[in-house]
Amino acid sequence: MSESCIRLKADIGQIKRCREKLDANSKSFLQLGEILSLAGNEVRLRILFLLEEEKELCPCDLSDILGMTIPAVSQHLRKLRAGNVIEARKEGQIIFYSLRKQHLKILIPFFKIINQQNMATRHV
Amino acid sequence: MSESCIRLKADIGQIKRCREKLDANSKSFLQLGEILSLAGNEVRLRILFLLEEEKELCPCDLSDILGMTIPAVSQHLRKLRAGNVIEARKEGQIIFYSLRKQHLKILIPFFKIINQQNMATRHV
DNA sequence: TATTTATTTAAGCAAATGCTTAAATACAAA
DNA sequence: TTTGTATTTAAGCATTTGCTTAAATAAATA
Image (cartoon, rainbow over all chains, first blue to last red; front, side, top):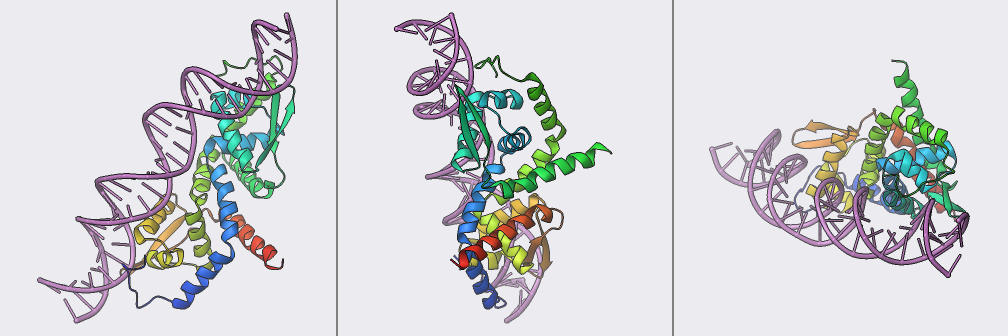
């Protein structure tokens, strides 16, 4: 691992402190990393944004809006659901998806950024 | 595309409105999506967190702290740099990486969440 | 009951990701 | 100028990702 650089200058205390910080937060990195990787896909980011704006949408609507296949949308929804970011409500044969409260704290800043950037570019 | 579901119930107005919102924000989705996908990798999330805490670190330190190969670290740093999330400062043969101000607004909430969760789990 | 509609699941595949090892660069010091 | 140190780059490879198409479920309707 650390065979290829020797460093007389390395701050041993700093290294140790950093390792401890990572250890103490390992769970956070796992959880937050998962949500960010879910939101870090443009299609899924669009889906999340749309769910925030419209409260709930079905796979069919999303397929229409995003201009992509229903199975493609469905597979993104499955991932978001597995990550507890969205939830499903069944009404007859239609399934409505919506954002879960649980992780909304992380997502809301993203929506703010998106809307702010839109405001910023609108009056150029 | 939308061949497989017909929907008598579809709200045409809603579909149109959603498409327009996506169009208006297409640049945001691209830019934010890129940063989120960068931060959505556990190793890179750790690197970003460490840079926030320590101001600057070299690949060699990061390799030591993260317990991974220098080339592996270097390739993550390259991605972060290409995304304008971090910048490099050269001091002799050592290269110090640090967070760029430009995208800090997006990252800071992440660091807060990480630190808050640590606080929350500490007194259980 | 048979058929249509909305959705999911599965299999297949090309592209992207993230590591490994080895070679190349850049700077420092002997 | 030669040697050593820090870093990057490149090539190779296994895994993951995200689509496609086709088949399977589930509910509504004829």
